[in-house]
Every structure is written in structure tokens, then in C-alpha cells.
Image 1 (tube, helix red, strand yellow):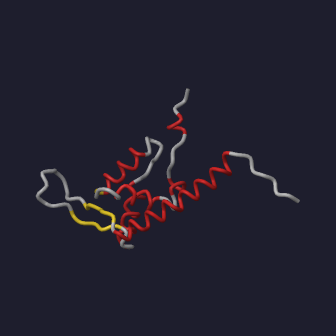
Image 2: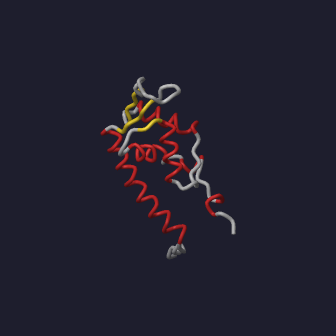
Image 3: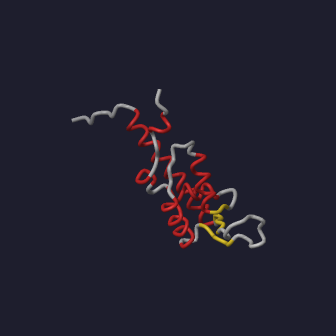
Length: 125
């Protein structure tokens, strides 16, 4: 039997309009650098979510410019090797946007779910 996860990938256009809420959700409880945000999204998506760095980083920069997240450079005294990383954390403004995004998602998922999972009633003529 084929692996359903591999057949049903969520990527590109399907994420449009939802990426900001997804990123803010990852940052809701703990700050993270960009690659960690990407890893958490893919891990939570159980392999069905395929997001590229080329989509994530512009979204992080937009959220920062809009005041939804605040970024800081990782402390230089870290024992980790490699270049310093930018750490992102959600702001109060970002928390408000996340709440709005969740409410919008719930309405969207409910309406679309009713349409695609059941017969559509015919309009009375």
C-alpha cells in the first residue's frame, strides 16, 4: 500500500496566506532561529509539509518589518561552531495576529470542510 504521507505533500501555493500564522505559532512559546523554525514546522507536519528556506526567510523578514517578531543576534559566546544566528521571538502584536489567524483558520477549515466532505445542497429554484 502506498504511503499516503508521500502522496499528499503540502507546499508552495497551498501555504499562501497561512505561512505567517504557522511561523508565529512556532514562536509562540520559545524563540528560535530560522532553520529551527523550519525544522519545527516540518516535524509538526509529520513529513507532509515541505517548506523551503526561500519561502521561510522572506516571511520572517516581513514579520519583523511589520513588528510581529523581533530578531536578535545569538550571543557570540556560544560554544556552538559556525556563524552567529538570528533568533526570532513573537511580539505582543504578533500574538494578536496569531489569534486572529487562528480564528480565521477555524472558520475557513469549517466552511471548506463542509463543502468538500459532503454533498452540496441544490439551491431551490
